[in-house]
Length: 322
Length: 268
Image (tube, rainbow over all chains, first blue to last red; front, side, top):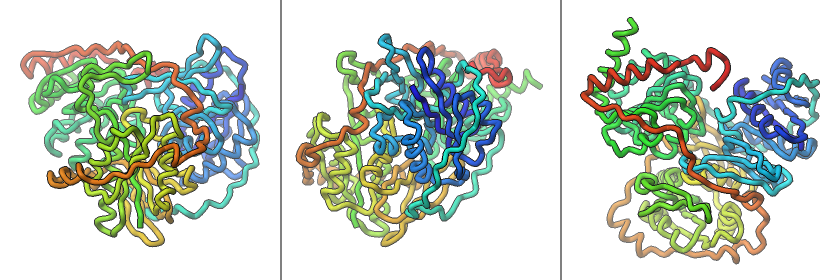
């Protein structure tokens, strides 16, 4: 079986590792070769060698970081024609999630969105696992197509045994067609200023929702995050209320967070939010509503008003550490 | 100018998840007192389309694919003041949803803009928008929160991982919509809800609309099983007065080896 891993210019090293882990997991117990295509101009030799693929390709004209996904679609389609993989892995971020379905339509492939596991069925068939209903349930899918396109849900394949493979980097001669011109970028807003770690890499996330009642409610959360060396997050409800910028929203645009500790304050636990925090190692929920669905996914639950508990918790944590 | 918004009926998560389970024989969700409503990002897509129409002027047509009962979601669209609504009646045995939506758009003469929600709350594949763009051979813009302009060029304000960007697009194009504080769905007025009940919904038969479907990707795989995973996460409640709760919580947080996983460089 030929497996093709496609790294987009947005796939930093950690993401590429996850993609390779997924590919190696799929390859386990069968004759498979893993091909890696690095499409970006940031795909250097060190990255290529460290990935552990049997074959590595770079584009004759690499794509820059400011690419538009449309460009990549034509490239990946042509790579599929040249390399004829049975299985193709892409990261399930905003880029992969818009590329993969279009690629699947073009190549008449099956499409597995947001895959979080691969299983070997008794018959030797490869099954794909993905969350549905915001992670409340899982579905196992079998592909009947000659090509299966898979987007890998971030943080789902953090582990993987690697076989050492130091492949020669080859150049794949796919010249860029000039983009259709239908889409041009005219403005990029300066990113919001953030203090502390970003959500994706934060070891701790202190997150607030509608239950906070106001923008001022986030002040205590910022203080708590600072003490714990973490980042502040927010639910969609808090963003919609205009209390905090949308870049703080957890579960937005396909991001998955995987902190060691996630503290959900005044968050009811809507489906998309719960899906976004599924990879958190420990979840603490603080909510006045003891029926809130968030308690169904939390390790520790505190039924209380955050106004009382957060200052007290800050006192407790600073008392002992200073 | 014609604008299409693809909407879907989905389980209302806030109303009906108490006894969420999956029927093993059918792979379908079984909940008592299930309530359905317009899926959240689809409702936001409709809001973005209506805001555009209210500012610039256009005809907004809501489309859905499903059984006859799915017309509820279109009545909601009417209540929010969509101009037209059409149901592609399908048992699920005909062409794929995406292909039927593409056929419906063509049936109505095509449009300048086709909007979809970013993802659904049930299957959550996020494939409808991008795949629809492919079937319509149109450019696709992801995570749009607002659309401006018109005639020859449209400006889409899009959310990116680091903030926002504006893309200039020529029609026809397909977008997926995500939430922002500028596109919170309007709450329909009671009179509009009443009118929506009597409004005319066009029904298109899937088999007529798309007599020779291609084997779309949905049909290129099958569900082996669906299940509710048994999670090790049993929620431990911390009770008591706020001070006691804070103390116990602080103790719990201290027992966690935060950051250790990363320091070891060996996840989990």
